[in-house]
Each structure stands twice: as C-alpha cells, then as structure tokens.
Image (cartoon, rainbow, N blue to C red; front, side, top):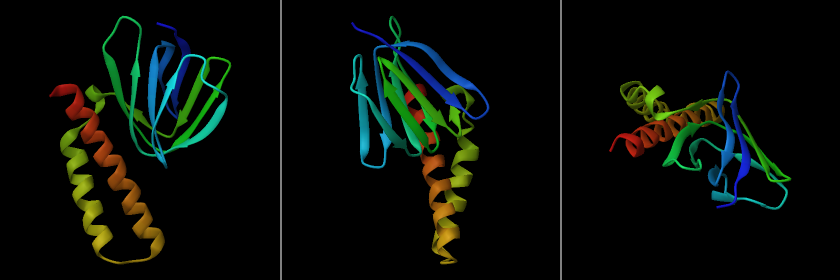
Length: 136
C-alpha cells in the first residue's frame, strides 16, 4: 500500500513521526480521511480521536485537542495542543473531568465559561473513547 509521511506533534512532545498508510482526523465537519497523494489542504482539528495506520502494524489511536493539519506533497503535519496514546490516559481522571464539565454547563454562567466546560467535556470524552478502543 502507498504511504505518506506523517508528523503528529503536540505542544510538549512528538506523538508520531514516520510513514503512514491512512489517517483519520476529527474536524468541525466530522471525520476526515487522508491517504497517500492527497490533495493539498489546511484544516482545523477539534478535540477527538485520531486514528492512523502504520505499515505492518494495527491501527493506532490517540486523543487530541484542538489544532491544525497541513497536507502537502505526500506529507501530513498535525499540530495540536495535546495528544495522548491510550496507555497515557487516566480514565478515572477523564470521567471526573467529564462529570465536572457537565455540571458546569448546567450552572448557566457566562458564555465563555460554558464554552470552556464544553471543550473540557469534549477532551474528556475523546480520552475515554481512545482508551476504550485500545483496551476493549
């Protein structure tokens, strides 16, 4: 299968840097798939699950927060604030954050506080989803 170079970079680490057969990223409009020789594009990434297929390995998953993806010349660059592999995720902490975020959203404070709680909830849900896909 054809491959492309993939770089998944978080603010504090390199999650993956190497060849990739396929990649699926979360965007504001839904899941976006990328294969080798994809057309040039720049797109926003929202909190969610990134899945990528490394040659000779099973599909890999990571929980990511907001960021950007740049696709050009058979090379994909993903820049996100945070990225976590399933083994790095503390599911209990994610559940607590999800519950606290739901409670904060119900308290009807300012729009900014509501949006912050909404973003925290999205990150917590994506972290639990990645952990579940890997371990179940």
